[in-house]
Image (cartoon, rainbow, N blue to C red; front, top):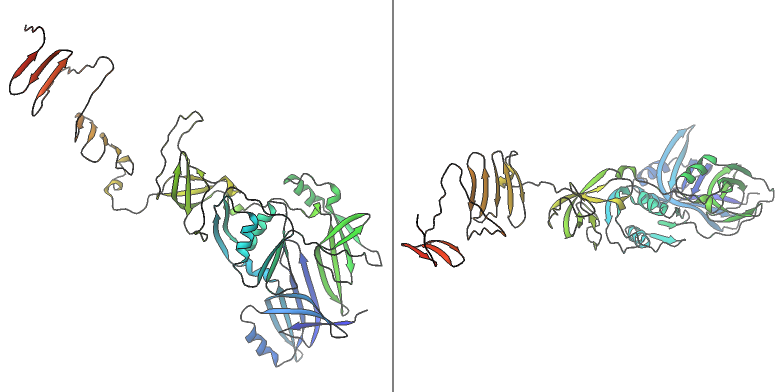
Length: 466
């Protein structure tokens, strides 16, 4: 028996004709309400509905007591003029919708930061927000966590799914109130009529099993629907056939002036979700800058990262053209400040690695001719390949140049030393051998020597001239 009325504020109705309300784990709560309004209120409401309007729906008892049914933001509305009456429709969504509007690029590269800290950091970015933790979430990933052009809502849902959990929204409070996992609800009694509908979600069950939820059995695929006059909350429990079941979804409607609630129940394991993947992230890369280099790993700062001020302690493998476990291969690491790319090969950002440096705009002549290949360190040590030569140089006056048609040219800004453990042969097949020194030329072997310095001096026990 109905002993209450439905009230809406600040956009009120003369009479409410229809009302539907949906609440479900992992989803925003939604309510749709239709009814007649005073004619003169049309312009006022149209002017009022220009920003985020918080609308409160209440159940008012015969003695004036009030119970909030829903409190959210008007996300859609219409006013229909018919037969000299104004009929208004409002669609209202929980405040969590504010987290689902703008996409963000944020990295979390502090391997010691816990999931709970990430949830709390994101929640504090909104006014009138609160996040609750109904299940433990105090562990850290230890590897990169990346919000890759996702809304905060999408990102947190994905993180929750890593523990096979979900987000739960509070629909009866103003602001952004949500939680991780299922709140501990009240014990609800099966209505006196004892009626319910049961179905088995076999397709969903099989998909969950194949996605890693191997501990499920077929009883976890059972869904019970019970129609109630009493208002319940997500997380409330009922006992059916000796099994404890949890309300995970509620569909409410106004019927004959009375609110009726279809409560959907599952086992605790039946509510678990498989790990969500971010398909748009797979195979993409982000521009980044090298911060530190250690052995064959690097630390990077991601460009355009909204979370730029953070402690970075995660090391990424640096890709090379060739490498083997025994150390054979190409080892050439980038320098701090170099521009590189952070690659996400699959749907999990923890698999990320860093690849090739990216050429930036420069006035250097070294990058003007594609026919010239070079390898240069930040200390200006360089190997250069031109169409007709190979040059090894320190760019400080010392070089070895191998040129087609000319031969080898060695230039040193200091001394040149040739040293061999055994024989050393210097010969010319068709030309001459020239040894020249500005001040002197010395040839020595053991105790024998020839010195050319303003004359020729021979030193040794015996001198033979033929």
